[in-house]
Image: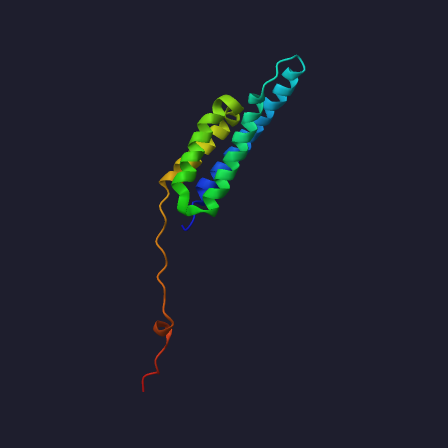
Length: 126
């Protein structure tokens, strides 16, 4: 397999759940702001979800740096627990699995290059 597609897709799906958890936390933050409790930490969950989505896209788009994207995905998944409820825990698990798959992914063997001269067919036997 030339690209870590499973790792990227799991990371992106986990990122969507983390983004939804961050959205819920930010709406609660806006609700608490009406009563005088104001903090910018409520919006950190949105950033973590967005960055997790970006890590999933980068895992598929730039597979040469799969270890970097995988480690960053694992860090973001752990950071999503307090700030985005872990994406309702499902986002945490999916992003964590995607990060682990990205770190453990090994590029497949490349196809042998066939030279044009090797493809030539000789004259039929007489």
